[in-house]
Image 1 (cartoon, rainbow, N blue to C red):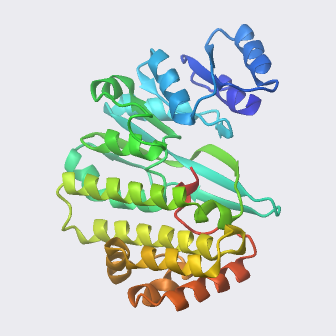
Image 2: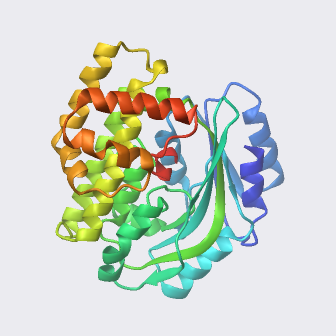
Amino acid sequence: MRRAIESIQNQTFRDFELIVVDAGSTDSTIRLLDSLAERDLRIQVVHADTCSRQEALDLALGRACGRYLAVVDADGCARPGMLTELVGVAEAHSLELAIGGMDLLLSSSSGRVDELELSAEAVVFLTQHDFRASAWRLFATGGLLPASAKLFRLDRVRELGLSFVSNGSFDHLFVLDYLSDVERVGVLDGICYRVERRIAPIERRFARPEGYRLMEEEHAALTSLYRHWGLEGDAASMEMLQSRYLERLVACVEGVCGSASGISSAEQRKTVSSMIAAPQAQLAASVAHPESNAARSMLAPIKGRNVTLVCAQARLLLRFRRGHAVWAMPDAFV
């Protein structure tokens, strides 16, 4: 927490307010926050009862008074020039959204660390058509959906009536609603933000029904966005959507079939059968071109609805991976 706050205090861009929400902590966090706020008038600490991340973000959003909005995670760290670069490109081109690159470090209980980069080449989209036609590339990098490493126009957030709670149980839906009719968007090259996140073993993370539900919810929202954009017939966009879905579906299947999932073999088969028989899974297996070897190896058995082979392949992948972070699109972890 201290590192996250100090990374904002040390920004080369000095004209900001930092709203920190303490969501009912029971350790020394609140004393640390109050101490930092006493020494820096730009920091405002909100003492909240125990609440979700989305509720905490909405508390901060309700108090924000600036021109722009940026989200910083407790386990995140901004590079010193992040705000200068994001505000600079936003002001130079009258942007509604500025996007920076992100480094994601995932560490597991086994001590394994995976580093993923969510970034794209620098570009400024001055028309809505240009942005929508190229958005699939930004989604594919994993850098477009997380709320972090971005600069939103606060007046536009309020005009659209957006909130983190009402827009779903994770940040991606907030971002998707903001993207719905956005026009002027800029992308910075390089990395301006870093997240170091500890994750549960992949079997536990993706075996939970909640994980599969969130994947389905996000896919439905992405599909709805592209329908709203009138790009249902765009081959590149649809391939990205289906490849993304398949990658995360395979992650969920691996989670269900892992020994740490805590469910019987019969229940594993039943769960996997319902997953791969779903219309969206069959569509994805027919048209997707996934990036990972794991997902590519699952294409044929999923398409053939071969539950036995899908489960066997998932267990084999888990054995070779030995706790290595599963490929499920990098932004699945942000």
